[in-house]
Length: 132
Image 1 (cartoon, rainbow, N blue to C red):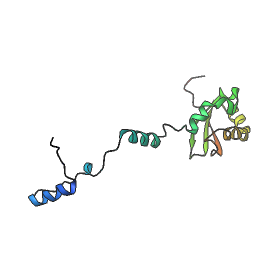
Image 2 (image 1 turned 90 degrees about the vertical axis):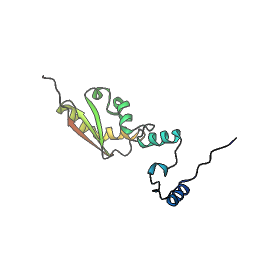
Image 3 (image 1 turned 120 degrees about the horizontal axis):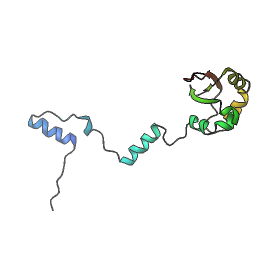
Image 4 (image 1 turned 45 degrees about the vertical axis):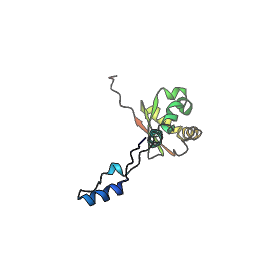
C-alpha cells in the first residue's frame, strides 16, 4: 500500500523558490485546525452563555428584592457600569417609595450571587404608550 506524503509549508516554499514560483503566503495555512468542541467552548465563554448574569438573577428574583406589591409597579431595566441598577417605575409616588427603600433594596440585592458589585440604584419614569 502506497501512502501519499505531503510536505510542510517551508518545504513547499523551498521547492517553489527552486522552480521560480511564488511562495505560499495564505494565512489559512498558518493556523492549525482546532476541534469543534474547543471552538464551541471558547464561544460559550466569550458570550457568557453558560454564566448566569446579574440581570437574569435580578429578573428571576425581582418580587423578593422589592416586595410583591412593588414588583407589579416597577421593573429592573439594566445595569450601568456594572454597579448601578436602573429601575423604571410607573409613577412618581412609586419612585418616591422606592427611593425611601433604596438601602433595603440594595441589601436584598447583595444576598444574590453576582449582585454584590451593585452599589447604586437609579429610578426612571416609565414612558407609557397608553392614554389615560
